Image 1 (cartoon, rainbow, N blue to C red):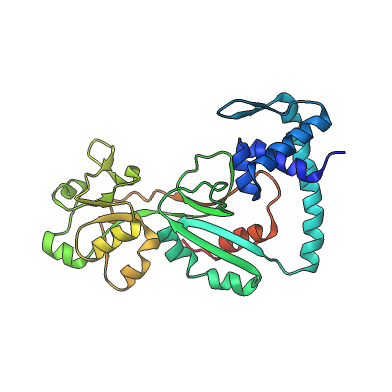
Image 2: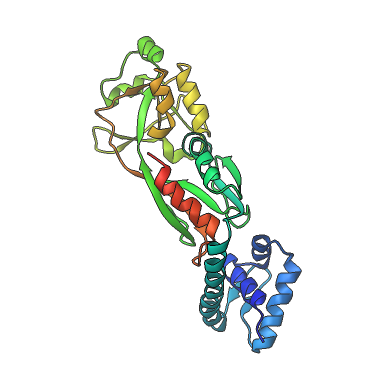
Length: 294
């Protein structure tokens, strides 16, 4: 008889594309994964994965099993979730990963409300400037700003942001206010060392192309870039929601407002798996959609 745990491990291997990835995802060792797959293949008298020294490839029989295994496991998990949710308070650890500006300006102001609603959910909030590997880093939900490229992830749109130009009033007093896009050539434009795509600003040149700046100074941190501008080092182009407090305090002022193209940039909460979302992840996704204001 096929064991449920073997099906879960089989699904993890198929989705991760490796025994090590599946082991990391399920908090078990690679030998346990390998042994489970061998046992499953033995029970079914078939080969589910073709192994090479570098990777594994799922077979046709494996693809058939994957489709039915997901349905089977999902059905059982849905039954369990239904009765558990009706009788118990949501609990579990929730690891959230996002770029530092989003953590500081979007999550930090509202996370206490979520904890008040669900005190038994343990929040592990991680901030960084790079794109995390959800399986390798054991992340439940990651916030991504921009168009998504990874089709293996499920995503829920939670809002949109826009990039605009800002500088300190002291900088403008010292260097003058740019009146048109060409004037930026005589200004100190602050940019990103990574990703360099953020050095393409939402401004059109005379030739109709997007303006690509050559940074006077650069950093890989949006927060560092903002502080450089607050302290009169130059003009920045960042997401609107990251400078709300600085605008209120008068530390930054908009630049070339009438020339900036207001291009909507999607903000998504992404999570792994095509299958049923566990309760505490679903609750956070719903909360984020309702509470965030971009």
